[in-house]
Length: 211
Image (cartoon, rainbow, N blue to C red; front, side):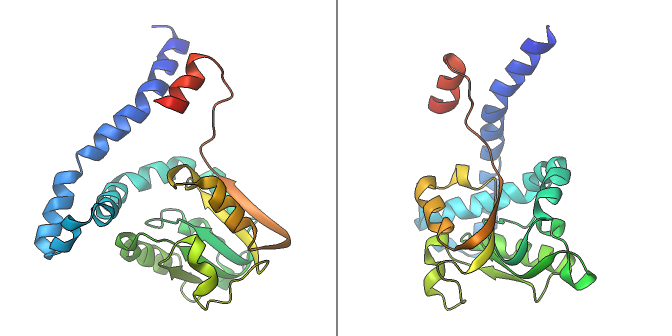
């Protein structure tokens, strides 16, 4: 098969394949719930989804992060001052932050804003392994709640906002962008590593935007 067509078919099939793979983690998620006696999780779609997502990305996340580590590391080297790390998940990219304790980077504080509490245990472990304890603080809340948590985060109060493949998975990304932008100091930096909308028109644009 022509290389171009082969690459195209692989690109079109990949998201469907990924969704099918995520379904295979449902039995393990249910087993964990029963083992831990967390039956209330079954009564809430939101709670079950968080548990399912955490199990899925505990397995798949490191593979995805490894293939993109060099690009993300270079981007994160620009982080400085007070940093909002939005949606760090299980912490697969935490080790790419330059460690201030070892003379790396110009960061004074990193707030890892992760509302999925199911991922906090893994995130804490990754923070510890990266030697960022005391610098990296996990915040179990949504970005829209930051101003009321008593963390000293207010409008125009942070130096760097970081979003890494998170804006594509939140409801109302435009609203979130406006909210986060308000936290940046004048002259602050927003580090973005995200999926992007195709510039193609015709059926390719329809496929990504509709399917």
